[in-house]
Image (cartoon, rainbow, N blue to C red):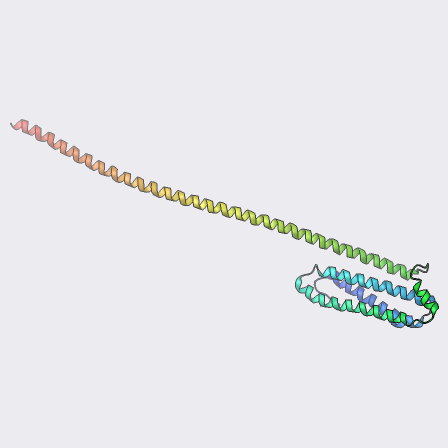
Length: 227
């Protein structure tokens, strides 16, 4: 089965399908042919495999949380199917156990897994379960790291926004200062223009006064000469 967006999720699906087929084979094909101790061991093995299947489903759920929303929505519908399959396997195993007849067989089943008949298959199943637990822990660490990075990113974003706000205030303050400076320059320009006009007027009045004085002097001189 090919799942776009997560190779790890795809590997979990493959593991789940394999172990689900193994459990179904034990319940439907193997158990009806066994009796006594072998049947008890097979039931215990099926129970452990169902627990491992549940672990795989839990790991798949953790992995789905790391995927984009569009992919996550599609895979969540598939997760519901896997959970339903696990529940069906549990019901089938309970039904198979209920078909066991005879007090001795029931006593053997009630003895649980405290015996010393762990075979190589059960050891392999335990190794798989430990491996699944480690993968679940890795997924949890990845989620915690993602959460930490998200918090750090949020903090950095808030700091950047605060810097932008301060820079905007500085720009506005600088613009206001420039506007005030322009106003002062305009006032100074008007003052200089007024001063230039007054100076021109003063020069003109000075020239007129000089001309009048020169004329009066010349008049006085000519008057004395001709009288």
